[in-house]
Amino acid sequence: MTTIATAALPTRQAGSLRVTLPHVIRSEWIKLRSLRSNLLTFPTGAAIILAMGVAYTFVFTNPAIVPQETVGDFDPVSLSLAGVMLAQLAFITLGVICATNEYSTGSIRGTFSAVPHRLPVLWAKLIVVTATTFVVALASALVAFFVGQAILSGGELTHAQITDPGVLRALVGTAGYVAGTSFLGVCAGFLIRSTAIATAVMFGVFLILDSVLSLLPQPVYHAIAPYLPPNTAASFTSLTIPDDRLPYWGGLTMFLAYLIAASVAAAVILRNRDA
Image 1 (tube, rainbow, N blue to C red):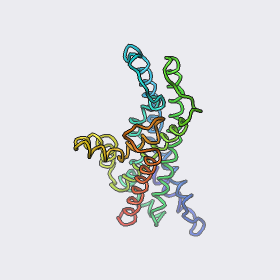
Image 2: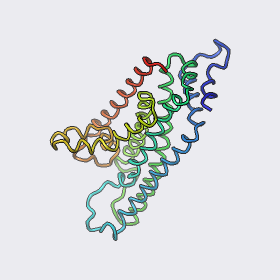
Image 3: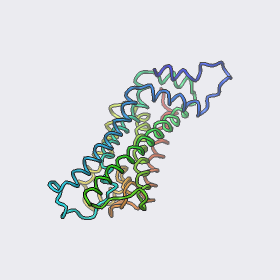
Image 4: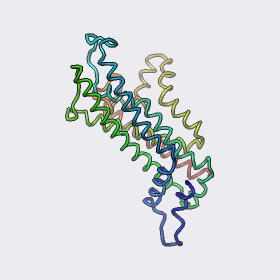
């Protein structure tokens, strides 16, 4: 499976095909579609976004569980997208596996024989995984949004329209954030080369780190917390930005800085460490 995709580049006669980034991207796209686990991850992540968003919205609109007189101001978009925090774990794992799978099977040597400069392999994986995740996440977010807002409107609670200010920005931002987590997963895979360890590290960063840092003195924690990778997302994935988070451009810039730093680190390691 992977061997076939890896061999797609050098099968022609020498000089008939230059190893260009588009050719490597095509090869990585074939690999992505060839692994059954990858094909299952996308619908799983999409299902989590939709199912949890609908479930949270149903619970929120059920007066037997949440008395309506206690409902204050809330973000209807974030409520519909409550499943993103769990779904991101599936896409993080996808990114890690796309990088570590070839190391575990040994086929990475064939890939680097076909692409001696190595870095196009990293860029191609990042492009393919991130772009595909973005499309799936955006489609899932849109469906979860429309279903969630229909439930809220039926319960006569505050709901949003796609044309309302900031709504489309929050939906696209959510898809971008999810795609960014898979991007970081790929980088972690190249840096660590172990599926289990890389996944554990990423889960720790996105699930546990904030709770651990909350044990610090509160002034220190509140100074650090807005800059943590998952917390920066609140700045560009929410209709209303929480007071304890960075402003829109601050959060977006910080998240992009994490992506750039991770990709540079992965590139340096890839160029200087043996396969």
